[in-house]
Each structure stands twice: as structure tokens, then as C-alpha cells.
Image 1 (cartoon, rainbow, N blue to C red):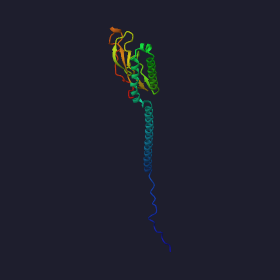
Image 2 (image 1 turned 90 degrees about the vertical axis):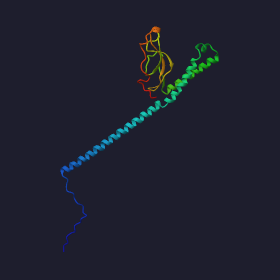
Image 3 (image 1 turned 90 degrees about the horizontal axis):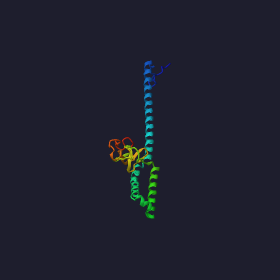
Image 4 (image 1 turned 60 degrees about the vertical axis):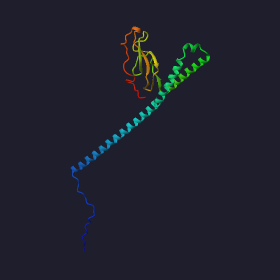
Length: 203
């Protein structure tokens, strides 16, 4: 006697085949997801590259300008050396007692060494005396007539200025020529602007 096989309800059911339109919709969806993931990956790579470049810039700035505050504090030491040297008249330095001469030689040598050390760390003296007034580097404290110095140029330097790298550490305080001697006009060459008008002053 033949028995009819029992129907197995647990057997896997075969889905009907997708229509062409449904297949195209699935493909389009997958392509959109791939494009989105690719875009996210490119954005992540770009952000990682920007972060690396920022870190390199910060490291370079730290190396170049990390001592700016310390260097600025040392400038007062350089100022005091210069004041001490200039407080002794040249004739007394040349013809005074031997101990005084030796002291002045020592002071001048120490000042030179201090400036050399600052220079090795990127701190440079601002060229000023006789130079054309530059509001990015110089701060005018007075303007005087001068027959010897052209209008708009520096006659004397009251305080030396310094830069560190490409940044202004301290402007040079200067006296500027009006030109024309005692009867010169105050109009020509009058310095304009403030120090640091365009130079980087963030040191």
C-alpha cells in the first residue's frame, strides 16, 4: 500500500523572481549607499589630512615662536646693557682709568654675546637709524627738522626694536626727520599709521 508523503511546512519557500523594475531599484539603492560611503570616506581622509597639516603648523610655530615671551623679557636686559654703556662718555671710555676701560670692554662683549644668542634663536634687531620710517617696524615718538636726514627717515633710535621669525617682537622707538633743517616743513614725510599695521604681531 502506497502512502502519500506528508507535506513539510518547514521546508524553505522559494520567493518568486524579482521583476526587472524591482531589481533596478535595489541596484540603484545599493549604488547610492556605496556613493554615500565613498563620500564619507573621502571627507574623513580630507579631515585627517587637515588635522595633520594643522599639527605640523602648530609644531613649527611652537618651535619658531615658543620662546617669544622669554625673548621679550630678555630685551630689557639688552636695554640695560646699552644704557650702561652709553652712560659713560666716549672720552672717559678711551682715556679713563684702566679698570674702567676693562669694565666697558666686558660690558660690550657681554652685550654682543647676548644679541648673538638671541639671533641664534631667531630674534633679530630691527634696522632703524637712517632707514625710511616703516610703521610696521617703527614707532615714532617725535618728529624733528633735519638738514642731514631726508624727510620720513629715522634720525635717531630711542629704543631698539626686535623681530622673531616673521613676527614683530617689539617696534623700534624712533625720532623721524621732517627734512629741510630748522625751517623745514612738517608736512612732507610725516609718518602715518601704527606699528604692526600689516606685519604679524602675534609673537
